[in-house]
Image 1 (cartoon, rainbow, N blue to C red):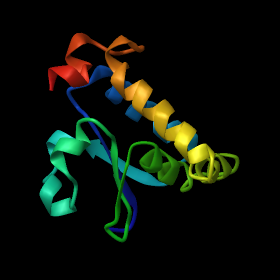
Image 2 (image 1 turned 30 degrees about the horizontal axis):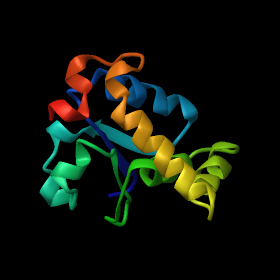
Image 3 (image 1 turned 45 degrees about the horizontal axis):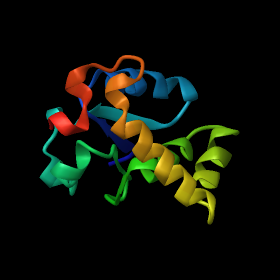
Amino acid sequence: MDRGLMLNDGDCGFCMRTAELVPRLGVDIDRTTIQAVDLAALGVDAERAVVEMPYVHPDGRVDYGHRAFAAILRTGPLPWRLVGRLMTAPGVDTVARHAYHWIAGHRSRLPGGTPSCSIESR
């Protein structure tokens, strides 16, 4: 794989809306939905993928959640590369993880979200 692959939940309006905005950041990634690929072949945990966005690095490593988003940002131009590094820096990493989980847990109530986006409905 030449470029990393962002995978989002195609059944979630908030996730789809976010995935459509990410390329505007100038990042160098490919993207598709978790429903459109063979997750096992990519080494992606299917259960975790509906709760935390996976990002498959070009070398096959997989990050989830805030670390996935940080890795995606690090493929882009300044200042996004710096933001991506900061998100996983000691001290900030914990805050970023909690923020990501709060957003994921409330995605059904965020712009583009619908009741079907709710993690509890999965």
